[in-house]
Length: 600
Image (tube, rainbow, N blue to C red):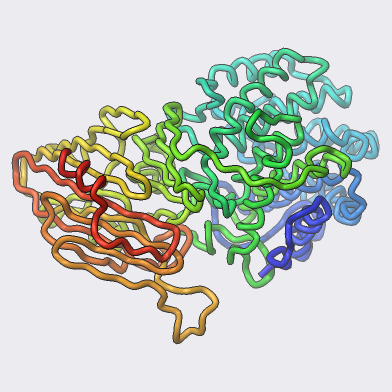
């Protein structure tokens, strides 16, 4: 556990303390030359030495703003990281970070150094000796000589080049212009950028907008038109993105790279840094969105026994990770500390923290999500038309569930041979004979309105499913018309509910009441309640006990599920699903929900 779990996270000093508390356990993990952090023995798609450099670099996302904000508490740490910077960029030192190649992970870690050249040039560059300055420039300039993915990575090179500009070093102006033009090509509308293919998720916020807002702060005199454009796009998306958070500060578990955890709120920090608010979200609301998310995360069991952040989401869990998640990768979350560059007298810190309750319904066509919430903003539910890119681990689970909830985090598949190992919450899964279970993996077509989400998909060859999802408060109706060239088994699930009650005596930890019959299945407790009711086409209900560690937030869960036998030909399934943030087991189906379900 880390001392940050006891941090109240209310004031600027609290946030300074939080950064120090997160960094403190890492100092014991530095290599002798201070150029790498060796935090564990798990692997990633890049070598161990690069992973160690990554960990070192990601701490700078907190140290740089602290130094820019004149936080004296950062000075002892900066003395250590400065030594590592000098050694890591010295080709004659045994801890040299090495020469990079195309598509190199070290390009990612250069971004914060570019930001440092912009925000704290005196500390990060001018206090070095001329030889050390030369080494730093030559090592960073490698980013201009190698190819990289045509996505948010290009902003890393932009930050490095504007950093060079700020300290009087040669700038690859052609690369800079080209990268900025490419970033324009990634912009769609309503504040949304896409990273690859059609994928729109947190990367729009903690990558494109974050770097764009740093650019706007640094380059508003040199490039005022573009700086204004970056700020305006951030304003366009600010209220939309705030819809991803509930009143507890929980962000919507959705998409890839969720091991970055409280990077979820780094966009709000970047908005404060660059002076972005809107009519609905002023300084007080912006402050609340940021600090509530941090308070939520700092109270989760996301640290190891030494206080080091782990790979996972709500707890340590390698199953949900990406191939690019090394032991130090979770410290990308340190981007949230950008706001510490602002002095105590800034309006953000002077404002009183205020709640923000978004509208109960938002249809966001750009990200293919229909977002709803209860009137008290206890829970956000997002219904999705699919957002697939076929590149990352567990993409079906991370983008293709029928619904995502801030109360009930989604689960991932361990092995699709059984329903228990598949953990198909918020999905319809089908199988034929001894085949594996198959759920949605992309859509042939879709439509999205404020009233419903509809899509056509093919789980396997010879099977087409036309689905409609209709939200009704904290209920929603699902209708599937299945056309199959063979008989199938079907399993349709509600959300995954935690089985155990944290903090109770071990002998008293079972906290969820489960029930099932031939028409329904349900699970309810103080950590949330969900139920799925058969309206048409199902045979029986069952509460499944999936494999441990399949869920993002809770290591042991239950999943209420309906079973169906689907003959060859055309079959219609209709069900009603309930989800509530409290212990509110429904007594039957409300009339309005039943009317909608029966009319499907």
